[in-house]
Length: 561
Image (cartoon, rainbow, N blue to C red; front, side):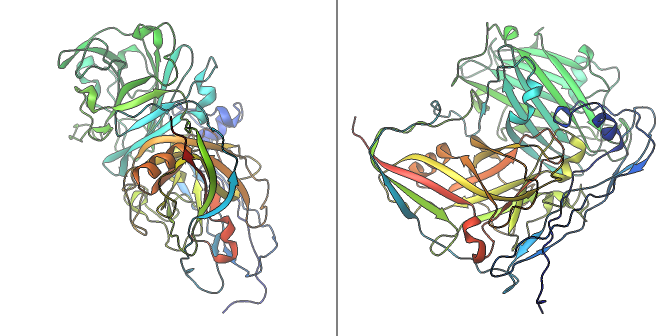
């Protein structure tokens, strides 16, 4: 039974907060809240009350219902190394769930590609060329003309690997460069944190540690141009907790190479059996240490691999090392991923007879999409280590969230979006001139504190099943191919929401040329708290069909050389 009068509530949630973080926030702007946030003595225990704002909004003709969801309460104690000090109750993001009043589960509609306009023949291009990939996994690392790359934390390139379980770790990797150095930041979701206070080079990786591999060369094996950088988690860092090596034929040999690392962690305490949240490691590799006078030119491709080593108890019970890319062999650079210097881009060849097509869920076209991670409620009601990584998106979810931040303690709020757009309805024999993904934003976390986000688009290589996609089984990013800025909304804007545009030309061009669907993932490298951005999904009802994720693709007839 439906009531004749329906109230629409916009719930404004916030990310998880902790007593030590609140202490930092008093003196540091939120967008500079980067790890390392090494656990420190916090203020006396306090409870953060969920911030919920109810806002009346105009109803669309078919009167959808926005059902508020409960803010979860998550308790984590952040401490110094010696003893726990203070417990804070966290809060999490929350948003309405949109559903049609006519049916509990909206019927999936489809639509064919529709040409909408024709343009004058002209060569068209976007930003600089993208080299052909050598590897199935490739990351484009943007250049930033700043002295301190941490100030561009939210604009770093991003990739990820691993899983969230009691005995497995998941890792987000951010990467970028300036004139002086390569900056690589790892955020690791880890239940138990262990390190050796008196480490040796030979045993660094017997504890929680990370290893970065770089090879600027093009050879088939290890050479003197192959570099290995290892850093162990610790309560402050220092030279004793890191080591470097260079390659020889088929093996690694310890060698002095100047670089710096900075650890950070969040949880109860190091070296005990209490549950923690995770840790982080920042690598700064000066180009001069690699024999270079400055950064590589845009488009230069190096080889790169990453390992995360895990220890979860004093005895050192063996845990498999996690590697990116998944098939990477640390003594074989040809099995590593590609690190390409410069932001992703796409250049269209000269074309004539350009026509623009619009693709979205509707009659004739099925767009499959789903969110994974904490959603808009930060995994409320789930055990974070045994259930969170296995949770699926509700089959009728008409919204999704994209969220990340620098405080590793808040990873239960992190969220990604996946979508598969079939391209078979496009005419064959053309080339892609440009392609944009249009999303409609209707809300975000805690408007008074939210900051703008750079949403990044990635192509993935595998199909997935609706209703079965989880954080742990979702495909890894194969390449970052575009992005777009999303500003926070101070209040609910009304339906269909505010359109936001991401350039996905490179991904569409590849998928179209291969005759495959466009398989996308969306994520962000945000630093600030309350960074979640809420969008309408393809499963929204027909009353709001215009707000469904939409591809605007311009094709042209290639001009003969």
